[in-house]
Length: 313
Image 1 (cartoon, rainbow, N blue to C red):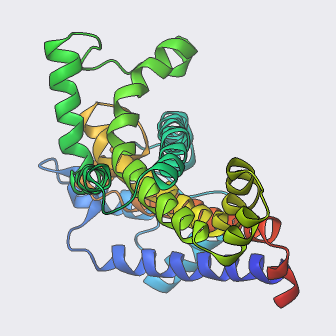
Image 2: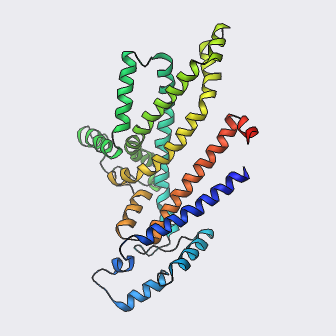
Image 3: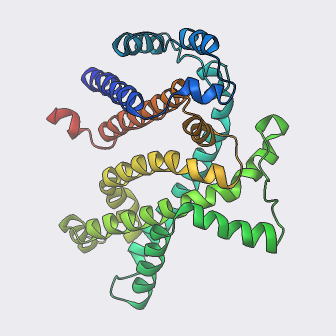
């Protein structure tokens, strides 16, 4: 386990170097972009010194890494506020959207996948319909589905407002209500993928020798399914759920813009447009940390689900 944590830290260090290098190579000057038409050489020099852009690139990188180790991501050029504060202010909105979307994936994707595996064959009419629907769910982009939801539920049926999002400070109920449509838009593709993975994994296990042996011994089908088949299917299911969690985070960037949600995604979009390097780098590091943390959790879950993995290592 200690080795996994060490690998994760090394991964983050490598990712930080890649992020820093990429953004240093992007054309454009954040200070000149901030000054705009009110250019003043004296003010430019002051701002470069304030944001550390007057130092050599290598020195800036190590200074940035030192700041990260002390949970200091620097100051935003656009907002003139600490990057940490800007991210933490928006984090509850993105976190709420991500968690609700992931809950939809688990509550809908896994049960439907199990149900379809148990009662439908791939070559039946219902199996063909299942394949078409899930393929459509995977193919439709989340932003397009978001616009369809707005047209149906906001403009036609008027069940929701177009800009229904409210921060959690205005009440938990209105906060959750404002996340319903965005969460559905993000989770449709993930639900479709989950259904297919769960179905395929369960079908594969149902055709195994130990299942046929248990049936011959008179063990009830539901007992076989929920006690043995699902347990043996969990590792591929957990793997895809971990990857989908990461996809949901990245998918929220576009959906937040469509539904005017002030989250990490919209903050990243604004930072890129204004060439705000400290803020852009900080958000990318935050996303990278979440990705590495998710895969570390997956490693732990693998060992809980199948203790043989620990023995092999």
